[in-house]
Length: 263
Image 1: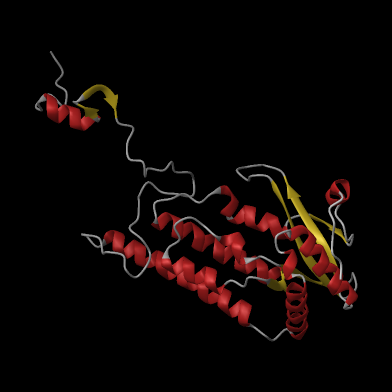
Image 2: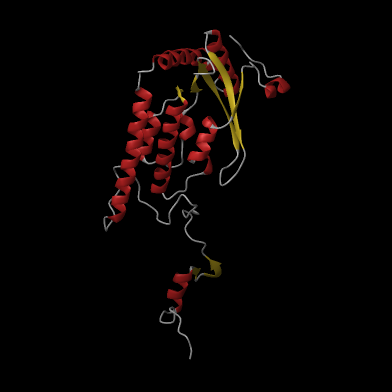
């Protein structure tokens, strides 16, 4: 008995449309939409409409409900980050922020070379009486985590027994930029400080909230979250194992003999 195919009832033009054949070019087979994206473990097979307030509601209301849920999740992240950044109960952190802002203004001419500016700010803080240093984290690729390295400044308050560690990043908000952000995620980017000064625990909460919001925002646009914006990667940058140094010139700069303008 001959087994009928599902395409048997259709004529040649209909079959061509199903398999993607251009009848003017029989040797050509379409590879699909240029907007299609491969999906990884953090993405789903659905493509969402968009999370901003201007998004059109779905015909059956189902996708619109998902969009609204994702917008609400991002809004919660924005509120959490706002509460952390605007909290002024830590007097030591408040004063440290003032000193970091002054240093950033003094060395604004060095913004084109972040490494040199970072070490100048560190030296300024040390001259102001802070136990500041440049920290470099470095991690290997493992279990879906992409390898990388990162540098920032930290300030240690107190002795080793009861020390508190404050993270200082001079270009913090830029580290959270993503492609085609939803409007609600743009609000989150605006809430993030350009210069971050805060404790490691506060930073941990911000990273968790921002990474989740980035994942939802990109899912809204039918995109996958890149490895360098996933939570594990972001935490490795600031909270992973690090090497602390107070050297004014990095070993790489010494080899290149890069001129520095110290204050």
